[in-house]
Image 1 (spheres, rainbow, N blue to C red):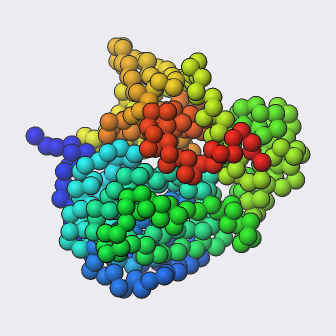
Image 2 (cartoon, rainbow, N blue to C red; image 1 turned 45 degrees about the horizontal axis):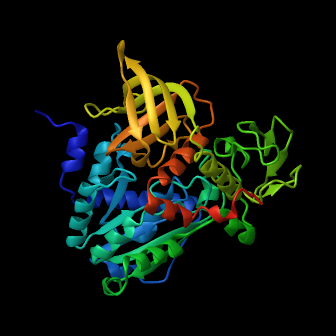
Image 3 (cartoon, rainbow, N blue to C red; image 1 turned 180 degrees about the horizontal axis):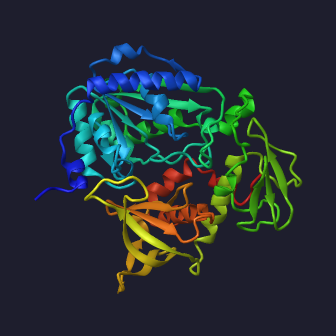
Length: 433
């Protein structure tokens, strides 16, 4: 019996990337990086790591981070680790396999992925990882799973950390508009096999977090680079900002040209070409977009502790087809149509399929994040299965679902809660100044 595409993807032997394709990809990435005015700097000689087992840990501030990072790393034998859901698409599946990609279930324990990575290192290859898992929502570092340090400790490899500055400002999370503005990628040889032997997992984790950390809004307050695109820098920002800092009402914000406006109280603030928040009509406005976003998280973190907390919406629960490769949205396999409810105990979908009850239950400890997409849906992993929640109303703001699900998961996972505390500024309380 012919195996489905998922089984073939997970169980295949990971080979070195096709050298001809990697040459073409490297050439294309070079052109893109030149067009995007990306500059690279190193604290080591990249040629010194050729033919040695090496791990690239790259920041993930931008959706185009792989374009910047792969080219600058200067290794054509690099096997990139990619989220499973990004691979099972018509037109991408075969190409990505030829590039030697390794699939990963995001946020989930993935023994197959670990096995593949160790095999690559054993043959003196290179691995590319984005330890944050997903692109930054607000232009600063996302949590890094402490298990990353455990893998690094056991790897017996050289470890290079690459961190970007300006990449989020050029390709932010809430808009597909590409902005013109400088991007800098810094590569640092953080660990050698000899150094790893002398460090604990905690020391490794702390050093990785320190080196990979970024905040593009704080960076540009000093650098003062302009980022200009076809759309104003405020365009689409209501997808990640949903609480008015003045009247505290939810889902009342909208964008008017280059300004964010509250339709309830009239609060207004402009986002200029530097991504500064200027000309605010109230002193309650946060000092930058990242601080505004993190203030919202602190509000949600307090709200979900109430036993009566509940969010709901009507929509469709889907997974990915594994029998045939299709381009989105035809790659979806519908599991149920009905209503989803999120509480601080878990996620519950009650619905129907083909006239029969089709109910699903996902406990909070197993759902790390309901990650929002700018295309109007939520996605998550549970027990190494990928799911999509597609609302009937695709225009509604979904970011609170992401924040709430992540903070609910933190109630049940101490290690992940501590990792979040390392990057999310909970110590500032409910203040957004």
